Length: 470
Image (cartoon, rainbow, N blue to C red):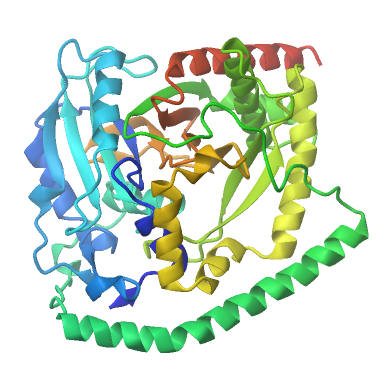
């Protein structure tokens, strides 16, 4: 039985009825010629379950949660509890799809089963940016089981093998279920885990101290400026306690134009350009509703530090940076954000790639559980200034065309949890020659996602024009 890491356990126990802690997304597929239906798709998925350990393992808990939960291979696994067939209400356009997605992501996963769900959705009509005749896969996976890169690994496991690859071998699935441990067995495992926790915590503290020393040297070197606004950020309407209501807004840009912007502003990266576009959209949105703070918003950008694929869990670090939302000029904002990302990356690297993961190992399990639950139940986010205003996560997707059972993937949008104090998150994904940007939010705190998307498109147009004039 594999024990949950401290960070994974934090995501697990942060979940309340109004804050389901799953990541997920929406994939658009073009139906191939010939026979293709839900049964075909389900059997395709069944044949590939062995390619990721996320699909058939579930959590077991010790009595009274005296220790961290552990993963077992679920002896009661049934694919029908995870893969379902749905139909959009007519006419199946963007409004109907958005309403369906919002309901799907508002519902928590069943914690007694493997922590994922995937719905095959038909009846899809005209959706901007996608050809007619598509069907949609909407999926969610608990954040305690995966981070962004692990989710991508899981989806890649379901995809058809590349052309020319060996045919799938059904005998390769050597999976065997575990026996569900009894209460005494779980108590014994928790006891053994408690004996090891001081050693694990000491190792994590050592890594943090070493990282702190590196950070001190970086600060004294003067090579990079100290990242701005690391301790507090201004309050915005979406930095408050959240309800269970969710909303997703998304749009697509040509990746080639984003690359052109990067090349014409020397030194910048695709990530710099995208962060600048999102920052400009946030500025426009808050200005339109009369809530633009005098101080710049602060963004948190997760950084993947994963060494292996298909092992699940969370392996992430993070950097924070000023989004320069007080700067009206898009080109000037891009230059400033580029400088901030260089500084923030330097300090994040100095502190250590696994600092966020390691720091979660230092907090005693029981104390961490209590703190996570009290933070939500006491609505602490309504009284404190946030450390940062919004998370912007970038998960680069495949550069080659992907298929599922012969159906061609056209593109996808991502989502990630929102929680008290962080009522909106921006997810950036790429696929072949497209860049997809989605904002997932508590509907009560950010009710007009179309206003944000309109601002994002205007920001793209204005920055494109300014860069073309260089």
